[in-house]
Length: 524
Image (cartoon, rainbow, N blue to C red; front, side, top):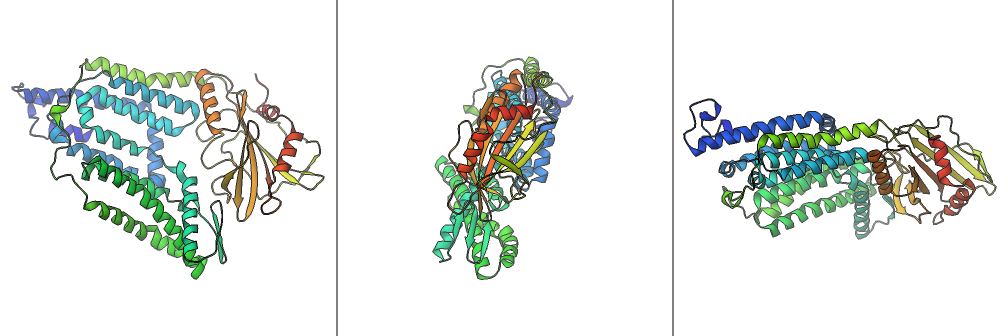
């Protein structure tokens, strides 16, 4: 908004008549007054929207400041301002006008926010807010101005904290690249998921070493360079492909280098070398390399227009005041609906719930080697069982009276292999009926885990199924309780699956939905 304000106050194109001076004498002076009226409406509407969704603004600011993966987002806002500033010569040749179709973006953003609120998806709420703000720009400045600001509006999507979902995949890719390179230099190695074993040590491709931080920042940089330095779409796409592929390969080289140095020296020396050299110098070289590769292909001339104002049609104009009122009403409606539904359907879980006695299995002292994590659970119980053949199985039950931000069944970094636990997902296993199965590992120890989720009246092993059912309950009302039931066992030996013990235990346990309902408590 401050940058667009230059269109009114500081540009010679807009004289002082727009601020109480002599009456307008030309079409340019009238244009200044039109810009002033529409920018004031846009600023006031945006402030109202930000106040209404101040929780989302506070969440985004906290993430940008505290998460090293998204620290670069702090630069995105001034970059957007700079991009708008670059387009001022073309923008001043346009005249803003309220445009009703822009309200569709506001409505879509409100719908996305509501779905995110219902499903416990913070990213959907954040994306919904951004879409509503951009809908205001389109609705209050018009089609032509929005097209002129197409790239700044697109680039604003890099404000969203998206990318951490790639951590497991990036860990796997990094580990596999390092294995290939270790083979090329003749170092014998064994890979188990994200754990690499060589004769002189055991290494884990941790979340912090997955390379997602660098990849996310490079994608944002690649998009910016692609717009500012290229005209050809073919060259833009090629540069973006390099901006994605090179960081992934570079991170695999980084992991290999750390392991190889540890093989030649010691693990402590390799860790220090990684933090000092790879932590900053290596990726600075990678950035310079990518920009250097693209330099000779830059084809946008200095001072070249960003768009042709004469080619942009405005569309049918509508009154601005009703447009502002309609936009704010569309933004407030999902908030009102969510607040109304939130007052219903919440019941306490069964505080006196105890894990059952299972025929043919005896309760034994619980082990400390594995424990799932369900942040914010209203109830968590876990026990270990042993049968007459000496096979041991762990049973864990977590229950939520109502899922919400920071407390839901499906969330990154929790579940069977939570972040920081030393356990990591290695592969999927054959899923039981209405459940999911996975293999996890930690320092040479392998486990299999079978998970069931009870939400409303369904039992599923699908994370998407949990989100959809949770969303339906929170949009239409009904009991909000949700329960996770996990059964796990350690592999009896290398190459052998503990699944027979898990299946036998589940058979003796009985219906999972009945156990989950007892944990959730009676329905009122």
